Length: 191
Image (tube, rainbow, N blue to C red; front, side):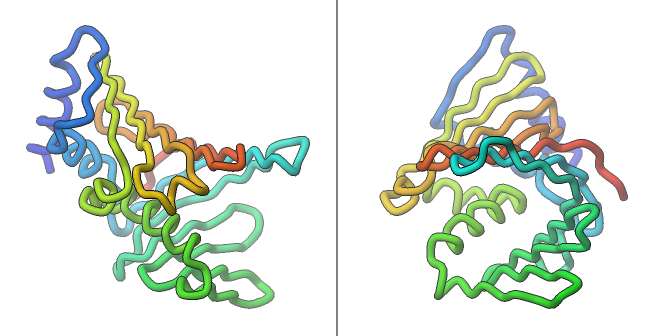
């Protein structure tokens, strides 16, 4: 882990000017490895959703956690609501019960959840299958654009932008094809 972080910081600090690359997958892989969720560690976030059907954005806070089975658990503060994203389904758990969304019934949700999982679990193979990468670096600040190349994905996703500083993930912005936008800003990591 220290070697990957050192490699990442070295790669990021080599450039005094902004650099863009879409070819060096090893730098991208190191970057995702450094910012991936770790089992048992909560990451707090603020999520802002700009939906074209609403006049004001929806804002919520919560935590993300990688479960031992590889599921990502998104806990929303104040609502006693959890979203559990696994390889085969997404489950929404609330005080009033549980809703299960199987991916066979929702192929678009399956594709999007696969991408979210790939980002958080540093699955560079999946990301490389669906996106072209554009990495801009300036000293320790980095900005990664994921541009969809797969036709089905292009129908509902325009762009994913990921920003960070050194080995810290700071923000993920998802721009959807219909103009909606979701921004996840990362606050603290709690072990």
